[in-house]
Amino acid sequence: MIADQVPDWLRPPPEGWTADHLDELPPGAPRMEMIDGALIMMSPQTSFHSQVVRRLANALEDTAPTSLGVETEMGIKLGERQRPEPDIVVFHVPEEGSRRTFYLPDEVILVVEVVSRESEVRDRDTKRVRYAEAGIQHYWLVEKEDERPVVHTLELDKATGSYVATQIARTRLKLDVPFAMDIDLTTLVRHRPTG
Image (cartoon, rainbow, N blue to C red; front, top):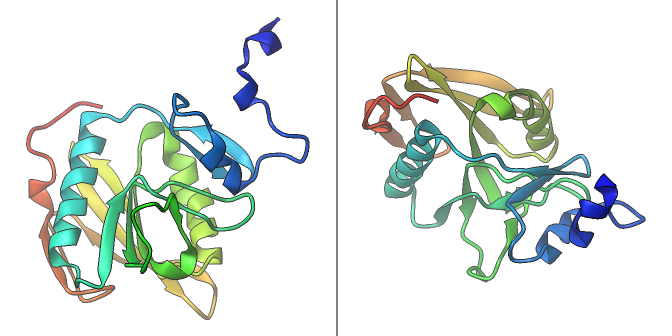
């Protein structure tokens, strides 16, 4: 029976999964995030995704003020049953740091998701709504267009509680918020990977 093949740690507790359960997963468990109380296993990254995440995170770290930190693949605990793991998170550096497994929404100023085929709906719709509800001021979506990254920047409109588009950048990302930056997007992918 298939149920007998499911490892014990993957069986939900009687009250259902909570964001804190992610810290209790065994060391060999695959990377997961939680959206609406459901555990979502992270798919393998493509070369495009990996390059864009690494180089964009480095560019953000190079331009961010020292009061801000930049990390990749770090969860944000949005609520009891919400703990997405964005590709890049920019946050106010907390006093206690290196032992953390997630950040809280009031610490986060920017979330970046590099959209992949399996995450399209979550990144473009579900996470967009959840991050806005949590009050995260800036949300970027990086889409692949002709094998090149295109950055869609969105900012939280406090009057409506939802994100509004502020820019679509194809070659250069020049912004004053959430901090001053000028990033050459053509350097994010060194070769033209497929996938």
